[in-house]
Length: 212
Image (cartoon, rainbow, N blue to C red; front, side, top):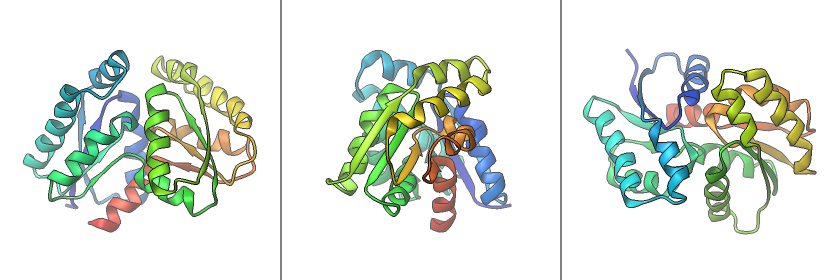
């Protein structure tokens, strides 16, 4: 049995992409999925990361660790500051959803494109990448209709809408798919751009395996 990893989800559609990444990159890991899909609804409704939401984010990590997790991986990108607080408090490795992907993106160049389907993710990730490099040139496009399609089970429309939006990013050195739920669209987006396309599950799983 490999290390137990607590996966903390705020949307159901993030589960399959990260499980697929673990199967490909770290099949020995034992996964524990912790889902509270009201988190994303409440975050969207509140328009900000409230103290109550932060406490809920921390409680899920503590639950996973109490159940024997050797590491925690969050899969929703709109809770960065709350997750950072968990990283400081816990002794086991805790990863924000996109920190590994953001660092990988900067190795490709300074013209970074980002596609998202959940609006609160955009500001959170732009702030994160500017902490890493204040001079980075990032262009973001949000396609909420794609998330609506994926939530209804229409992955083909989700992928098609993201591929159609990708050229709006302009000339980029790299394109990031901002959310775990978007990982399945990588191939479609890659056909629409002329630069590498990164997904957060792959980068995160590889980083967590390295840490443990």
